[in-house]
Each structure stands twice: as structure tokens, then as C-alpha cells.
Image (cartoon, rainbow, N blue to C red):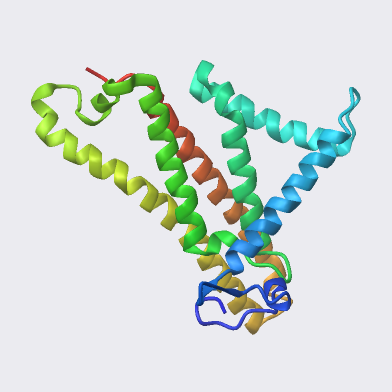
Length: 234
């Protein structure tokens, strides 16, 4: 079911993985199942590409070199000298989120990012990670990122900055979840009303939307890291 609407038969249903019982409690497991499938496919694909690296790249190697090279150039262009160390994380996050989003367009699959548990986990990781990077670089001086440019503004700026930072995982998770879940519901509606004429053309639109959501999550994560790495204005 998606938003109370009938959904085509999913692989998780066939494999009896929509729900599992843990400690006597029934837990929704569908999004975890599809997340694992996504990770398995990406690991196998990465292993295959790594195993077949050559000095004269083939088509598959060219595609991945173009993707990773473009992401690396973009990340380093925005983060400067620090960018290199964050390329694996940011590029991996973009590819992973994009792949999970696209799963919702495949027959028999569902997008794990259409479940709030998935997006909240990723958003909390981003929140903890960029704050850890900021603390690792600036130690106790990282608090200056929350106090504003003047000590006279601390009573005003500190609570505002604190609320701003705490709202980031909320906005990250809800934005990704809301857009992907909304697209899944609309796709099911179109599939019910006009299985062929309406569904196929809208795939292109949803492909663009799912790509943009991966880009937005990637960009915001990079932006938060950049802010944590920059010295506070004092």
C-alpha cells in the first residue's frame, strides 16, 4: 500500500519481507529490504568496475569515471583543499540516494526513500557528521559558529542558531521523503487511471524529480560541511 492506494505486487511481498517479527513485535521491513537490495547492487557494480579497470577504459568504466570525476570536480570546487577527503562520502551519498529514488520506477520495486525511517536515518547521519567535522577542526571554538559575529548578539544568535541547526535533519528528511512519497502516490494513481498512456510519459518527469531530490540532499550536505569547516566570523 502507498498512502492507502493499491500498489502493484512488490518483490518484498513475494519474498515475504514486507514485515518481520522482532522480539514478538511486528516491524515494517519493506524499506530495509529494498535498501539492502540497492546496496547489494551498488557493491556488486563497484566490484565489477574495479575488477575490470584498464588504462584504455571501456564504456562502463567511462561512464563511472565521468560521474565520479564530475562530482569530484564540483565538490573540490566548492570545498577547496578539504574537498578531496569528502569526495567518497558525498559522491557515495548522491549515488546511493539517486539509486534508491530510481527503484520506485522499476516494476516490482519500491523506493526506500519513500519511507520516513530511511530519510531520517540519513539526515541524522549528516547532522552528526558535519558537527563532528566542525568539532574536530575547531575544538571548543566551534561554539563560535552558534554565537554570531559579536558577543553582544550572543543572547539572540545562540538560540536562533541552535534551532536552525536542529531543524536541518528535520527539513532534510521531510523534503526527501515528501517528494519521493508524493511521486509514488501520483504514479500509482496514473497507473490505475491509464496504465499505459499516462504512466510511461510521466516516468521521464519523475526521473528528473528523483534526480533533483538526490542533488538537493547532496548539495545541502556539502553546504553544511562547508559551513562547519569555515572559521566563525568574529
